[in-house]
Image 1 (cartoon, protein in one colour):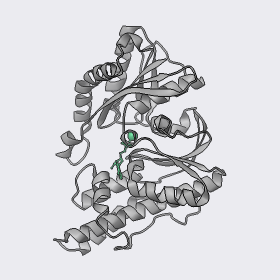
Image 2 (cartoon, rainbow, N blue to C red):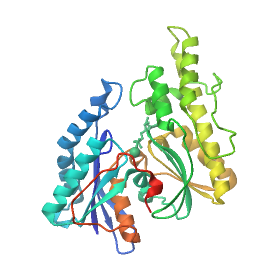
Image 3 (cartoon, helix red, strand yellow):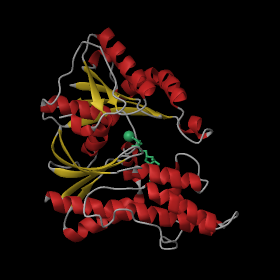
Image 4 (cartoon, rainbow, N blue to C red):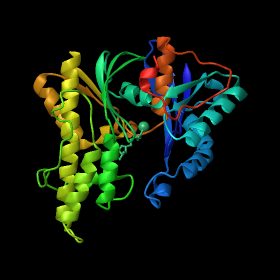
Length: 344
Ligand code: KG4
Ligand code: ZN
């Protein structure tokens, strides 16, 4: 079965073709991505209306590119999958509208996919795919959640952020340090040149005893520290503050992820979402897991942030598991707010 997947929930247009073979193992045939980062940079963040307009321009050329790369054609597409939510309403409508129009023209069914389920399952496309059950640490620009995953569609929320997401903490701190948008990768890069113990920043809820997170207070602490450095901090001071900020975020993520594994009685962790690309997070998780004989699985680096491959994959896996059925009613709707726990 060949699934064409379309992702358009935020500032990346992604299209991919995934084939599930007879044994149920999904294979990524091709994927293509257009990031709007440059376009939104001038505004310091994502402008939803501009995002929607750009998705419209990009999605069909990307679909053509993917089919050509895969040596395939539209005729060979069995199902068209799209991100149904959560995300920006207008941006989601572009992907959903194009997917349904394309599927209707081809006489093929569609399937709306949960964006976070895409992130969660994305390590199944890696060279070292996980096995069920596992604990998932989902860390993106909009979400920070720990889930127990027993099978496709079986997602139990163990803990989540009560305010900002981890990616938001990276982005907002980076903005305060003058690193622009999106700040996560820029802050991580600068952090490699700084000392992580230079400034004592708070580790919110580190000892709360539960699996929840809170990152809103951290950016205030970063702002206060930045102001203390005066109007013209040295490059070394800013690098130290970046390293200290990253250390605070990473320490909390690692501690809570390990606690979640203990609570769930599991030895396998899957990390996904944009922040899962963070090298320091990966280093600390790998080290902590190796000490205990546990395993950590990640998506390929290119599939950590938003992409079409994870949407095609999630659809293929749901269909293979019998968790969803693709339909031909083409009466799409989108779910800008959509708790993952609502799907099964
Ligand atoms: O999963 P994603 O692409 O989009 C959402 O669904 O939100 O995640 C984007 C987030 C942004 O906050 C970005 O700054 C962060 O992931 N991010 C990183 C890194 N790469 C991306 N944060 C820290 N270190 C990185 N290397
Ligand atoms: Zn995402």
